[in-house]
Image (cartoon, rainbow, N blue to C red; front, side):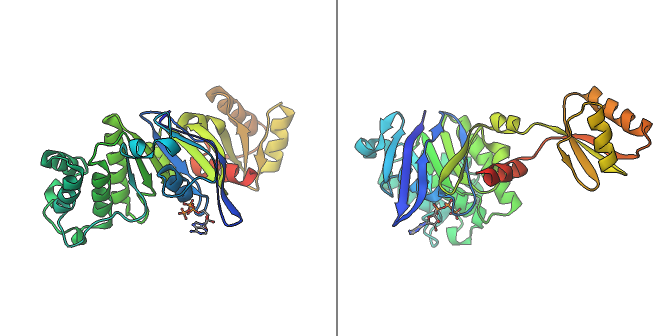
Length: 298
Ligand SMILES: Nc1ncnc2c1ncn2[C@@H]1O[C@H](COP(=O)(O)OP(=O)(O)OP(=O)(O)O)[C@@H](O)[C@H]1O
């Protein structure tokens, strides 16, 4: 595991905002760290970067304890929290060259990073004139300069327009292809679903789900959505024929999906019994709904 925490907790005064968190971030993953505003994501990230000292529990990064190997570990971690530290009056490239000098990194690496974040054409433009998305990408380029094995990004798509979001998503995928691991926080489920390989969902500082993106989608069994002119009659009819009916609403009902044939069977059954079927189709709960379900149940 690139990151492993056990029993990680943190309190601001007497408000416990991170509660016994066990993170497991595999090498080469894009780990989406999801949770609503105030769930404790930034606090957790600050502990991972040693910007806040963990109240309780342990943090291992690259299989070493952070407490005893801070410098060694953090040298191999790039991060972007909140606003990137950019000099507005310098060009994008000058910002990178400045940092490169401090890190003793070559100009070639600066050019490579400009190309990776697709800022080569805007390299000589003042960073103050960059769009929000370009600034974020410059921030990511700065974080990648010293070739870290792990990149930690706190809500990098916050405030970006759809194009900016797509650019950041594609950038993360390119970064992972270079053999790095990306840990990225977000409150946008639909967004994380498109790029993450692994997901951890927290609410009120507690881990509610952790696994692969497929594990998460498998939790949500597909259902058959049925819209008829009388959902109560339809539900009763289906129950009499040994179907499980999950939810009955005024105009629709849901049955757990088993096969395509089952959809055909239900359709004929309803029609043969005088009901009008307006719609019948297989539906997978989207991540947004699933997330709400998990959040509500805890
Ligand atoms: N410096 C602080 N002092 C006191 N309470 C704080 C401080 N920073 C954060 N908190 C509280 O800790 C809780 C967790 O905040 P945190 O910023 O970690 O959440 P988050 O999941 O990152 O949310 P967001 O997406 O809004 O940034 C919140 O209730 C917040 O009000």
